[in-house]
Length: 569
Image (cartoon, rainbow, N blue to C red; front, side, top):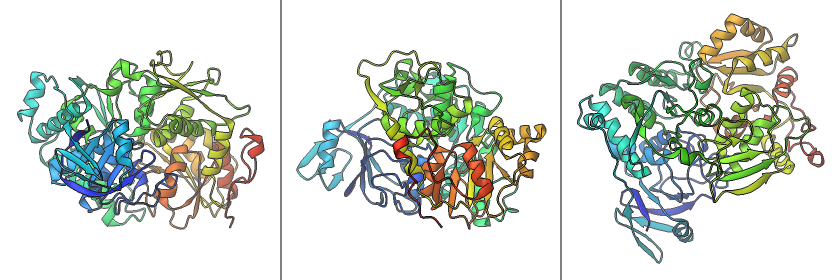
């Protein structure tokens, strides 16, 4: 029987999405139009539709963007999923519970989903779904969540209004997730401090004004401005002020102003088996996959709710049995592969396992660095909804037995060749080289400094590195910062490429190049610029010459080594 996750009375035309969608980075927050250039429904709009997709994917910020769409009158009428989904469901819950904007959320079986997908419009009430000849009764999906005396004290308001509301949201979502209890977490990483729409500030300010204070150590994601320097950088007051006020609201509630999308680069990173609560998709995937810590992909707003209570629903990959792989992917490391292999592999693995945890085999002797794994996890999060992956012989839980229903697939050299073409559709003349999505590490900064020693960024090219405050302090002490700046690179803390805006993003730039698979995916929609992609050394070379290489690297499939599609200037 179809399940009603969030009840509402709505009707509208059906928009069927062939793939999951990251609402943040994939949807215009003002209009609801799909701007993800690689999505099959690119150009269509969520606004006013009954939107069907298998599940969401990508950024945890999607919950906040959905709330912003509701404020802008551009939200979908309903969301219909085939798989479990938390990010957009939470956004719909907050929109209804705090601000009175109702969005229905349903979950259907595979056969029910396929039947509804053949219809053109639907009408939904709290108890029924009607579409064409379909007339289905809806049943609420919930479970009994066992609460401790402390949990009930939160619900009774013993710890203040903000914490009470936070626990109400946690328990409501826990019931929808099928959780039977909550779990203590040791730390939280806040993703909702990115100013993707005024809705983010509205929510944070409301919780701060209600007395919200974090109860566990809480770090903060990259924000949308360089907090100390945005006015000097020429950022407009109408954007810079609310963006900085959003960060300030979380600091006021006790969060640490770490301002990095790579909290695993901080000195006190989580350990194997530790229950944490992180938002920011790349950080979640890295924590689970590489560190062996345990966290689901918490949506924006849920991150703060957990920080205010120290409690999370014990569901998903908090449970050991849910961390096993359900798809085995065979991969061969190409001879001579450079560091571009890892972000490309992550993107392809996400495409091959968009809704389940994969086990990658064939790379046991590859010895990837932590930066290689960082790049892989970040790109994987753009194409998969899963919160983790395993790599045989490399990641700590790769020996977990696959589930009985696990299947197998392969990622081939032809897949890499095709993706190279997709990532390199821009013109050959490059105006901007973007480093740091996720934030650059000390090692990456040092490697780039080595590549740039004795060289200079081309006078017609901007080369910018985004990085966390802690990394900036470390490379300042080591002298790497001075070396990079001497070569003409600009270092920008606090924000990253997925939250950057003009004029910090050079307005005159028309083509950018990056070594990030994550940013190569999101940049066309976020920046409305053409993109080129390549390894760190190729990006450094392009920064000095202003020209992207015409041919793929030798390790890309030989018979596909033809010039990438290009509109050369």
